[in-house]
Length: 546
Ligand SMILES: [Zn+2]
Image (cartoon, rainbow, N blue to C red):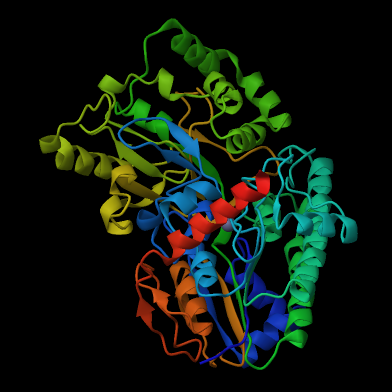
C-alpha cells in the first residue's frame, strides 16, 4: 500500500538497447540508478506499434479493440470515410485513467499524451499533445497554466516540424535536430515547473523528442542502411544519447524531490528500428486485384499522371514537406474540409475507389486491412465468402517478396479478432500485417498505383520506424527489485490506480503489476461515477461561458 504520488514519464519511441548502452557508458547515471535499485525491463506496444494507438491503450488501460482508437485515422462504421482522432474521440469511446482518479478525488497532471486535444478538464492540469493540437489552439487546462508557461518558460511549441522539411539535405537535418533539442529543453523546463508548482497525485508527462530524433536518423545509426554515409554519421550518431542525457538529468531532479512513498515509472510506447524499404499497401491490393479504381476521367488522369509524369511532383511535395503538412492539416481541421480536399487531390482517395468491385482496402499506415464486407455501404463480399477471401488474401500477403532484395516483406498476418477486443468490433480491421525487419507498411500517399515498393525519403525523415518493444524502468519506495520484466502498455493505468489506493475499473484490460510494485489490487465497477463527473464539468463550463 502506498499513499504517495505516482510519476509516470513517457519517452516516445526509445529502444531498450539505447538506454542500456548509455548506462554502460556511464552517461545516464539516473537510469543506471533505477536499473540497479528498482525494476527494469521492456514495455510491449500495441499491434501495430503506432503512437496514437499505443498511448490510447496506456491512458485507458484497454486493448485497442476496446477503446476503438485503431490508428491515427479511424474508418467509419459501415462506410469508407475516415476521421482523424483527437482527445474527444478517445473520451467518447473510452475513459482515460485520470477521469477515474478524478472521480475518486485525486488530481492528475497530464502533458503530451496522444491524443491530447482538446485538453481534459479534470482536476489537476492537462497539456495537449503535438499531433492533434491546432497551432492556434489553446493547449492547456486550466487557462492560467498556458499563460504561466509562456511567461516563465517561453513559447510552448506544438509543432516540432514547423518551418522544416522532411530532412532532404544535411543542412536541413541539422536544423531539424537543433529545433527538436530546443523544444525538448523547453519541455523539461515546463515539466519541472509542473512537478514543482502544480502538484498532483498522478503525473503522466510524455516527451516526444526521442521519437522525432530517431525517425530522422535511421540511416545515420544503422551502418548497413543503404543511405548510410559515414561522414554524416560521425556528426550525428551521438544525438540520441545526447538527448537521453537531457531526460536523465530531469529524472535525477525528480528523484531528489520524491518522498519515500512515491513511485517513478519511465516507459516508451514502442521502440525504433531502421527502415530500408516501404510497401504501399493499397497499391499492392490494387495490383493484386483486390482494390479497383473508378473509371471516371479524373481518377484515370490522376493515376496516369502519377504513374508516368509526376515524378517531379513527388520530389517537390517532399521538399515542401507537403505530406506532413497534409497529415497535420487533416489532424487539425478534423473534417472541416480544408485538409481532406488536398488529400483527395494528391492521393488515392475513397472517391477514386470503385467499391462495388473492391474486396479489401486500408485507410491508414501500419498494415491494417479491411474487407469490404456486406455491412458496408457498397459491400462486395457476402458473409459465406468471408473466410475464404480472407484466408486467400492472408496467404498472398505472406508470400509478398521484395523484387530486388528477394526477401519476404510481411512477417505475419494476424486476424483482427485475435489481436483486438470486441467493443469496437464494427470498425475493427479484418487483418493486421506485421512487416519484416527493415520494412515499413505505408498508407498510399500518392496515386502511384504501379509503384508498390519505395525507398524511405531521400535523406532524413522516417528512415527509422516503430518497433514492438520500448523501455521500462520503475523506482521508489513501493517498487520491488526485479529485472527483465515485460510490461504491457495497458498495465500502467490499473497499476497507477492501485498505487493510489483507488479500485481498478473492471473494464481495464491491463493487469496491476504487483510483481513490480507493492500493492494489493482491488477491482470495482464505477457505475455512473465518471459520467456524473463529466456532466458536472459540462454544466460548470457552460455556466462559466455564459
Ligand atoms: Zn510513439
